[in-house]
Amino acid sequence: MSKFIIEGGHPLNGTITASGNKNAALKLLPACLLTKEPIVLHNIPDIQDVRNTIAILQDLGVVVENVGEGSWRIQANNIAKTDLDPELAARIRASFVLSGPMLARMG
Image 1 (cartoon, helix red, strand yellow):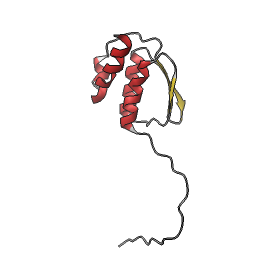
Image 2 (image 1 turned 90 degrees about the horizontal axis):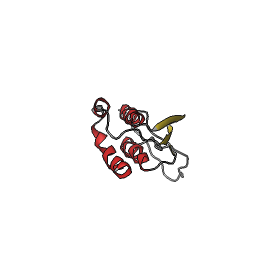
Image 3 (image 1 turned 180 degrees about the vertical axis):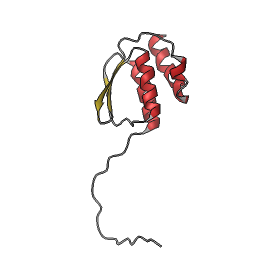
Image 4 (image 1 turned 120 degrees about the vertical axis):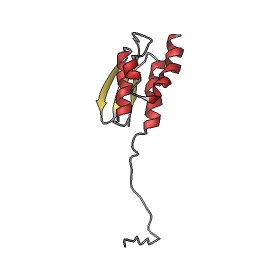
């Protein structure tokens, strides 16, 4: 049987980098629709739901650029349409999260 032996009296130090949070990323990406200004998001996880959300944004006319290491530059200054592609929207359960920013931006 494995065991850990913990000896006190030694200060801990170091650095950790928290991984990107899926639930936060899936809210932040649609929130980028609220401005025409470029936004850079960092620490975005490389998962299928994020890729699908990016595909939806691109289909709407949003410029989405991978700037490396989990960072994305998003600029929604020219939203080309207001209806989501049903095939793309069906890929993620949270596609409805786009409705608030779209309504606020496009009316």
